Image (cartoon, rainbow, N blue to C red; front, side, top):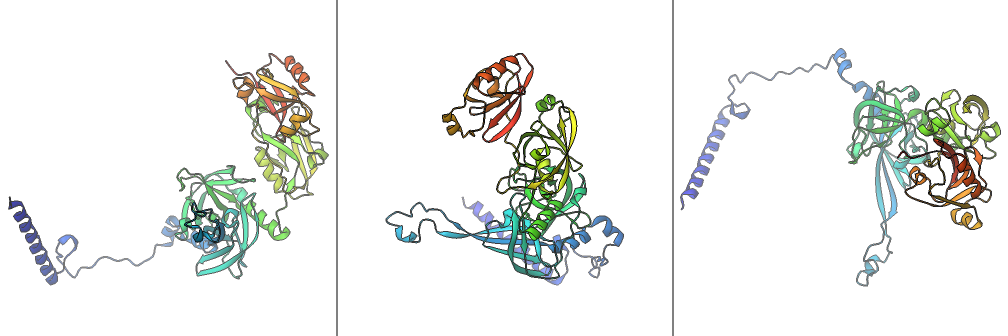
Length: 494
């Protein structure tokens, strides 16, 4: 019974003996790793201290590019006071004294991001979401290592750009490139304080341009697969010559980390915001005065368009630049200042980047023919915005099948917030299985036109809908929660 224990002791002693023997031999002789004896103790490892040749360096390294831009990319640390929220025991008799300062004791919240120095006297571009609401903003540079207190000069939440200033001179400003010349497939580098570990550089290509992802009002993002992680926000996206082409802003991720889809605000848009903040003290934008939406396949067919490019005018605001120029609802804007309009978001962007009181030319398609208007933009009112209409609704070719309409009364004007001047037929009930509901029509929508015929009340809505029975589709004009739009109505295939 004692044999296993004796064997363990014996093995342990043998191991100890071998270790002592090896140590004794090692003291007398030189050994290579892994116990292999050196045959020639005079031989030395080969060392080549020569740097890479310029040719090899140029072919394999991006160091010169990064060294040009990296000193101008800073880390930003913010601090703000926030309420901690009520503790569950704050009003308990046994713990009340612990919360004598109240149930919502303030605490400090720390933030992290990046920024880009764009002038040698200390103006810095970053994201608005990096510094929004901060009580204190600190900027750290890497070469040489320096820290500064920064102050907010101005911000624009609609593009997520903020402008900071530090009191310093002869700073390594990053040169801006013309981001309109960036193309899909161009190589780019992202520089920023990823996860707070310090300045980090990643590389990739431009995956797409002109992206909109719905996080801010005006979007024209450069998409890249260069890794952008938390802490990179506000950092630099540079081209292969070290020039700034974008401000890193967001990622699309299911895990919270980089998954190869990052977005940067184009340098041209950022530069425009900075110029506005520094010269005007705020961002001044042009205002056309229309409510617009994208073309769908149904709308394309209804308006006899060759493609989906353009922005459909749902409503022209009174006393606006568009109304004074003669623009009408139903017009499809396809060009602005010789720029081909891709969609409603693109039109919003190019109008917003045009100064008020600027005379512009705008091309529209009306009844299948092109018309060119000379328009003098006005200034966008604040806080009202020239904006997209909400999501378009669709109806059925038999408009009232499964739909109950009523005249607009004082009661439903009040309950549904319908303007006093609005005429039409209000939908008071709709069957969920009806083609109209499946198409998107909802209770509270006001039908104003069917097949270009005006609807004054419920009776007219019913009469006109009968006139178009059997048609493959019909164009309907409705009001919904303050906006007006065209809707193509089609029968659902059985």
